[in-house]
Image (cartoon, rainbow, N blue to C red; front, side, top):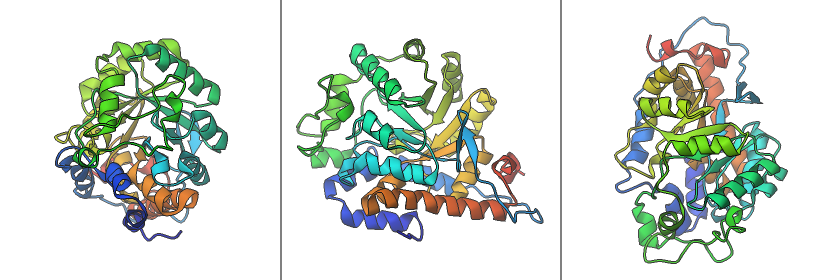
Amino acid sequence: MEPLNLSDLEARAREKLSQLAWDYYASGADDERCVRRNADAFAQIALHYRVLVDVARRELGTTVLGAPVAMPILVAPTAFHRLAHDDGELASVRGAGDAGTVFVLSTLSNTAVEEVVAAATGPVWFQLYVYKDRGATEALIRRVEAAGCTALVVTVDAPLLGRRERDVKNRFTLPAHLTIENLTAAGYAALPAVAGSGLAAYFAELLDAGLTWSAISWLRSVTQLPVIVKGIVRADDAERAIAAGASGIVVSNHGGRQLDAAPATIDVLPRIADAVGGRVELFVDGGVRRGSDVVKAIALGARAVLVGRPILWGLAAGGREGVAAALGVLRSELDLAMALCGCPDIASITSDLVAP
């Protein structure tokens, strides 16, 4: 696996995936403008590089929530990895470990959390959806803690599922041999077969659309794990997350899959970073496709970025090796971008690179 870039991996994945799986991974909400907006916004940002800085050696390592990682690039939570490869989340978490970074496991994984953590060689965080059945939600948290996950990433931008028209057209549901493994014990492991998106019907029936900020306080009361709030695009919501006890924030619009009119995440990152003021760690996802995008995100206030679709492209193209290759491409590009920007380490990626 030696892809030239992430677009190369995307093309390989497209050849291997079924139409249903490709559309599920690739699609956004409505007209899919937000998917494009995320990437386009990165492209509009210039880097005002420094010269005559000693960059003969570069150090890409950093820490997230106190844990060392080889680079400020984490694996975002994405659902249903076994649609891409038979080894599913096991291949993905091993690829993340090979790259020396954090893997965030989705509630909607096709592999049980215990198996994923057992296969991991690096930190595993768990992305949590809060179900109407709070007992089932708390039982899942207990499993996550016992398995050895080191943080909860609660998604707050999906009271209902965004209208993904490709999924509606395809009547998206899981093949008979795949389930939502983490919810088997609660009886919530299957997607309904409906005239439309089975996942949208699942969300409407089972997930709690009545969540308020008190849910973050509730989560903190039932777990000792740090709680990261994912799905924020407003500075005032970032303030509310901190007040509720969040240990971190992911600036995210769900990869353009929820509200198609949402702003690009990199565009709102600076004002959220100003509001947060370093009180908690700040992450961003959505549209990261080049190593230079990582430099831009860090310069604008992020501790690290999360990548989602590129991991699925690598998984489909080559399993564990493909995931590691996707992360390797970004690492190599980040290393070069840092050298060309006059940044020998992550701490030297500062705001003057984008606002001199």
